[in-house]
Length: 204
Image 1 (cartoon, rainbow, N blue to C red):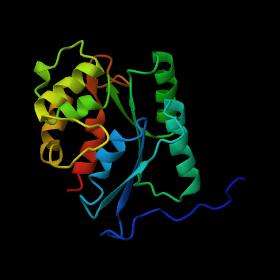
Image 2: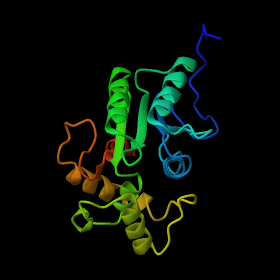
Image 3: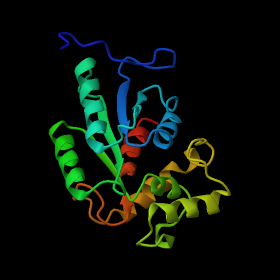
Image 4: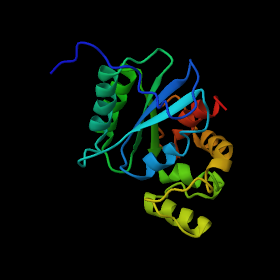
């Protein structure tokens, strides 16, 4: 059934907000890790609210992630100040599929935060010098480094303490790694999650 009117902006009114509070709507490929990480910042500022659209029914392919954002936009009355972001990895999807999704995101004015090879690289950069990460590291290598540094890593139980204090460091390190910022996503090892987190940090 086609919606004829949109629902009001889905602000969480149980937490502090102001009249011009902006929404950052984030759709992620992962079902657990990314959602838990971004929800750490729900209470970070009264001027921005972060809403993560869950992945369900195994629909983690980038085209499904884009469609969740598209459906959300059709359903809710957003403002020009609200932003939508797509958070995906390169390690599971062929380049042609990523290219199609990137084109759709650009057309729909959706921010693209792609990690090569995976989101765990962003987590690692909260603590780790990029120069010490092998240029050919795969996701398994990165998780091993993360676990070695933290002493433990559970992708289903992301805690605030190992990450929140180090967000500025992660942003700085990821930006240094982004040697080709004009490309749609990092072709070498790198993560564009820093661009999304720069938006979050700008409200603090």
